[in-house]
Length: 252
Ligand code: PGA
Figure (cartoon, protein in one colour):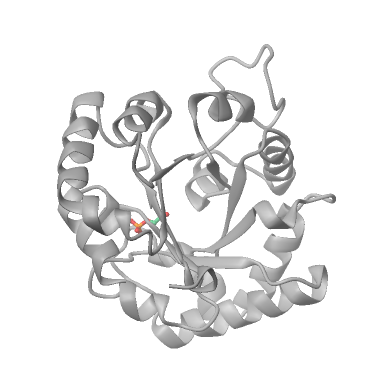
């Protein structure tokens, strides 16, 4: 399989699993997927909650799985008086290669504004992490037809100047499709990926990786990945169960 066709499959575990439950996952997942992972067909990234990063990293030593985090500090890339926060440098230190930034759950529930997201991206890139920047329209924006404008302005406002494009992945996640079981249909996904890739091409003179997220499962994963300009998947609920996640990777 040529490198160009290699897709990125990202598991976003959100705030799930204790250390022992994560261990059950990694044991089972590795036992079933050794051969599959050895084929190195796609890049697979697991993004557990902070308290699991070290144990998950250890479990995956010697496999092709990459480790990612779900967030990082916006104020400093290394350290400082920021109670409760974890810096991008600390994530690198623990073995992360990727970090998800600007997930809609953070934008909405934690009121993360685009300036905060910009700082997080800069800090992440300064620490050498690859950034998975999430953008997505609300149901209201989708229904009133203003979703393309909403997406392009969100993308524009989230990106800092001096961005390292090679280490940036955009995740299109329509908010109305996250955790709802309601996936965007193939035409909707194709329309947006084409639209975003044209914006990126115009703005950066470069194609960026754009992945899709929102109720991805074993039934729809392969169809979505076959859409033009879909470079990968961001998988929440369907990544929590080792068997389901194995099956998802197997079929794509
Ligand atoms: P979901 O979550 O697959 O459970 O919809 C995706 C995400 O929020 O990244």
